[in-house]
Length: 351
Image 1 (tube, one colour):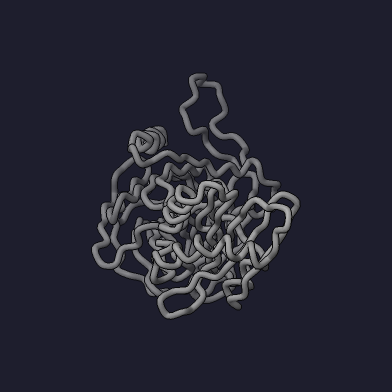
Image 2 (cartoon, one colour; image 1 turned 45 degrees about the vertical axis):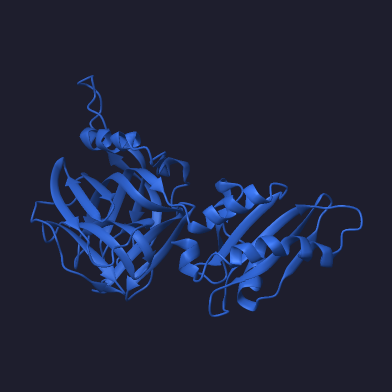
């Protein structure tokens, strides 16, 4: 695991990479699902039962003291459902980031299962039916990479290799451009390239199959954050209209009840969930006006080339004595019209 960790840290030397994230399950209460994740399923059956539990895990680094304990109790992520449905793939998706290039290191252990004993990582997730996955099977004793397109599994790539159950294994996945590399227990075992409509970015998730009960620990991600094209539009507008207090672009994600912020003056807000105002503006095309003590906020629809409302833009401006709703819309419209004129489809904003 030490070599894998150093391999991941080496990616910090990439000029375009500036982010590292550790999935610290120790901060989650026992038997709770980690915040910031969404449980879904590919195929048949119900979503998995993902919880943080305590388990014995070997230390990441070899102990200097030979008398040091070989394992220690720590918080791990567990998938505990035992649904025996064959085409049943529980996913726990990390919702806070859309990621392009990355290296992920983790440890996993298959615990039990009659139909399957599998554990894996899904990545560049577009939705529950479109993503890549690297998974290991203790029953099949193999490591495989494949692409899921519209719920259909593509060709399997990878070797036969022992994956004993009840044992912690090291897994590293590197995704750079359309090339995927995988290291398992310190050995480079998979190199694959997706040349046909590759997924260029997406979310990360933990993955199992059928009745597999599997644990994950010490997951760490070094990645290149994805910047939606809408963020570039927001940056340009803020340069042109520097007096704006705020500018945000929202789109509807997989959940139509939860609009997602894809661009903002405050980039730390990106990927946060919006509210009913943004949802109504996108779904109904109705504008919104709000007047606070020191500022006014206008939310207007953004339409694609077919005239369909696909996004909402919130313009936040200083208020003044005599501020009216009509005047606020008039002040916001030049900004919205310029954004409107610089995209044709929803994909132009988010991909």
